[in-house]
Amino acid sequence: HLADPRARHVLQKVSEMSSWHSRGDAGTGIGYGMAYARYKNKAGYCALVAQVEVSERVKVLKVWACVDAGKVVHPDGLHNQIEGGILQAISWSLLESVQWNEQGISSHDWENYPILSVLDVPQLDIHLVDDPSTPSLGSGEVATGPCAGALGNAVAHALGVRARHLPLSPENLILAMDQSHEPIPS
Image (cartoon, rainbow, N blue to C red; front, side, top):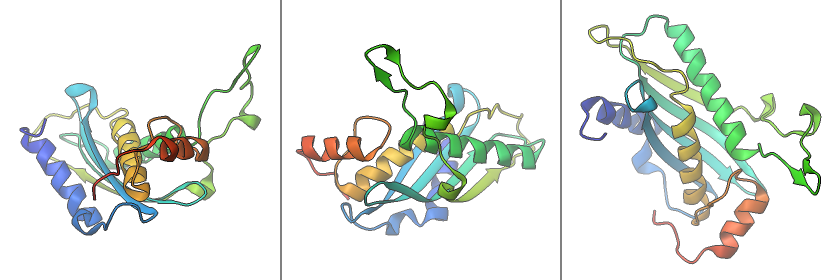
């Protein structure tokens, strides 16, 4: 994808938006992670940077996103779609997990199923590339995949070790630290 000028453009833009090159050293508890994807390999382009703080749990501080969906017909609608995809991906990546017991699935209601709350919504900075000279591209869930990747990379930068299991819960982060043998480079 990086040979594609549109891919390079969204990556460059999100790098500038987030001051990526001044993100600091790994292992400090504050981490930045970047990820990119092209939705269904033929639709919209999305690059994200997530900033997290890891102490007892992962707290997402800010997410920057740049999306190229070609000609944007309804900017507010696309912006809302990107916001919703980012928040859903944060919830999936940090909290959500079907629970099991001896009888099978034990997650039976929303009361006991962890999801992102309004108190955990980070600051979002979204840039839409509007190119009226190109056709509109599908953007459905363009932000969900790269957001999860950016969060994993940000946690790796914050801790200096890579978690290999979702959600990025305290238990899974402890497991990652216990199993780590190679530090993550800055």
